[in-house]
Length: 280
Image 1: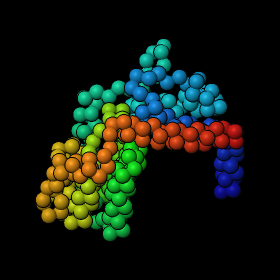
Image 2: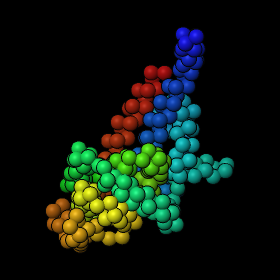
Image 3: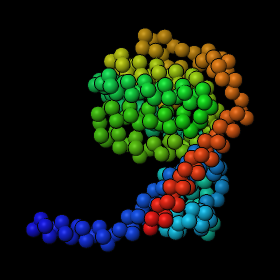
């Protein structure tokens, strides 16, 4: 009986082989398009032409269409009848909606994580903070964003509540997209943000759930400096001065870094999509 069931399943897999391959290509196109927005190659109100994307990547239009629909569901693209899909333009109200969801979720995740996080997990968060510092030194916008998102994703997992972790996975793509579109050059105090994450780790390590929850919620809402584990605040102005002296970064340099990172990422991903298409 079990053998027959297994044989039926294998037969189903064989029947859906082409569909599976198209799904894999769709996933790669999805990542490519999302990265193009994150890196500023696709700007707000740009039209997304499925046929042109398919032609340039050397794939059929079906996986491109699926990727575009997926990004539209996540709020990255918007559909205009008889005109097609466009990159969304983020409003201040959109940012407020995101803050309303993220703030309590981050606070709860920190509260739960503080109660049973391991030293190994804390070490992993420390490593991500170090990655942020390295991204600051390298003017690496994409690297900083990736480390930031991974940091908060891990805290949601360390909370030990699978429902909370799944909720974060649902909203994370939209949060990442919102930040990328509203602040494409990441016009913030990078040094201060990296050190702020370091203090967040210290609060998780302190074993004080209430303080950690409050700090993570304030961080999510952008309400100012995060206190260290002893309660002393670290002003952002001092960190800003340090950042300016250490890196001497300018808006032009940041723009160059964004374009360079985007070009490299797009080249790698385009090659991957073409490779997958050729295997079909």
